[in-house]
Amino acid sequence: MPSFFSTSFPPSATFQFAFAVSRSADTEAAARDLVDEIREQLGGVTPDLACLFFSSHHIPRADVLADTIAESLQVRVCIGCSGEGVIAGAEELETAPAVTLWTACLPGVTVTPVRLSFSPAQDQFSLVGWPEAEGIDSTFLLFADPFTTPMQEVLALLEERYPGTAALGGLSGGGQDAGENRLVLGREVFQGGLVGVRISGPVEVRPVISQGCRPIGERYVVTKAEHNMVHELGGTSALERLQYVFESLGGEDRQRAHRALHIGIVIDEHRDHFERGDFLVRNLVGADQTTGAVAIGDVVQEGQTVQFHLRDAKSASEDLSLLLAADRTGHRNPPLGALVFSCCGRGQGLFGRPHHDSGILAERLGGIPVAGFFAQGEIGPVGGRNFLHGYTASMAIFAEPDSPSRRK
Image (cartoon, rainbow, N blue to C red; front, side, top):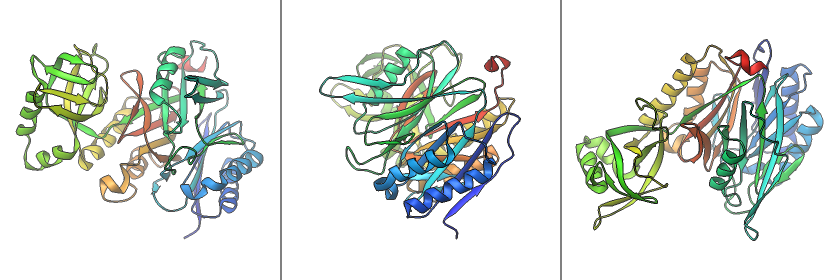
């Protein structure tokens, strides 16, 4: 089998996407292979955006990857990071050496690189390159180091500065402690913080967030809560509600619930009905037998609607397929390229076979250029707000804009 793979796709009237992947453990050779393949696919056109993802094998020489791509392709903006594994096309390379490069030619689109770091001593952020909020449609791609970046606070800052703007991406992987992961921005390689890009102008970047769960039991209104402790659901103790739902499950589902029972929180309470994609799924942390309270992995407010959820391989597979199908039927223009950030808890460990998420994307999206990585946390919007997720596949689907207004 060759050490690299690539494939070309016909460009749209406006945009052109390409990707290549190398399985070489030699970082210099991998970088040359990627550059050669992307050059051949793009026919000499300079990419506006490049996304680079690599396994831990290439962390020691990440600067070689960054320098080679910047010098050889002259890409306007290149961002990327190390991951727990690499996703390229219909393949998921979870343990082997791998590096993938995904490029996009986006004429007329503004691509603005951004950088952020956090100082625990001063308890403040340092922001470089972040543009002023201009009241225009835009999307952020963000890659952060989980050991040095308080991502919840970053997302709150993003909402404050750019209200309503979608953010997609993930937390880098490959290392086990602070300073061991790598982030790439242009020619620079960082050991912490966050790198990203803001995309604005005549392009559609559609988020698809698959949290891999299915709702079970009834929906309840939170009638008593404090911070992350839910005391009452619909006037009854939360633990009683949980026990009732658990006992109503069949044999196999009851076994799964012992290790994969979660709770979904409705984010947009103004909707008439709730379905897939309307719930923010969070872990059940524990329960207090004395008070009947249930602890969850997020802050809950009284008046919110919640429903218990179950996560397993079948539910995760169905959720991803249905959400991608809904995206396709809900938009006039087909997908042209996509980025995917999948939890390192998915892959073979969850599905029992390789290439699950990437295979479904290839089937549903028609074999377009796709690349990404296995993350230690996934970023994406639910109900119009950005969150950090777990066990999730967060996807950014690029297409011609449905609305002519996006071309202004």
